[in-house]
Image 1 (cartoon, rainbow, N blue to C red):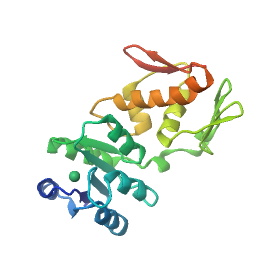
Image 2 (image 1 turned 60 degrees about the horizontal axis):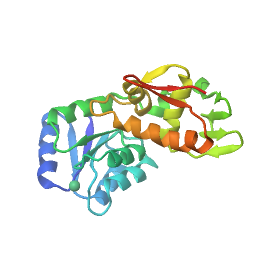
Image 3 (image 1 turned 180 degrees about the vertical axis):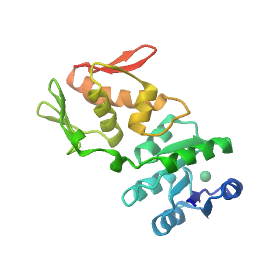
Image 4 (image 1 turned 90 degrees about the horizontal axis):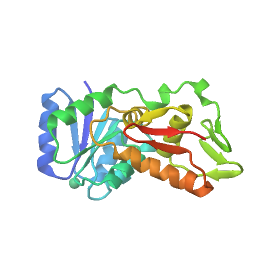
Length: 228
Ligand code: CA
């Protein structure tokens, strides 16, 4: 049976989650601060983390960031704030999913089941897909995680890179936000799709605005289209 680590400083929530998850048949461990949570995550190798964002000692973002150096355990973040930048930061630090408090326990249970089922990203990528992609002077090299425009290097975060890669692989074809979420973020997504729009803005800022080109078009009512 899968083992779940709950890292949450609000006792009532932690206790509630522990009881619900045990009731579902999971083995459960809890930690009340970020440092203890990170220690347990590293030493007890749970199958999944439910990680609160606002924690004493070490924030959830920081736990996520440090844990990702060592482990690709699925992480579902809990956030009290309905703030897109927090979610984006958490996802960028390697969280797999997030839930905004207050949430329905059924929804969390569903997302836990999805996260436990999901094959890890690295294992899923076949080697022959590592060919370079180019459009005009823009070149993306999956093998080295590098992007260039002519001679100029473009520095992207992992998610920006993955998003650009997906768009370039589907060059000339309109892709929906849901398709981008499923393929780039890689989880079944039930909430808002703002995350995609935020990352499209980042890419436009780093590529289109910087080099005075127009690579990513908005297709109203559909999503986005990469063309160059
Ligand atoms: Ca908290």
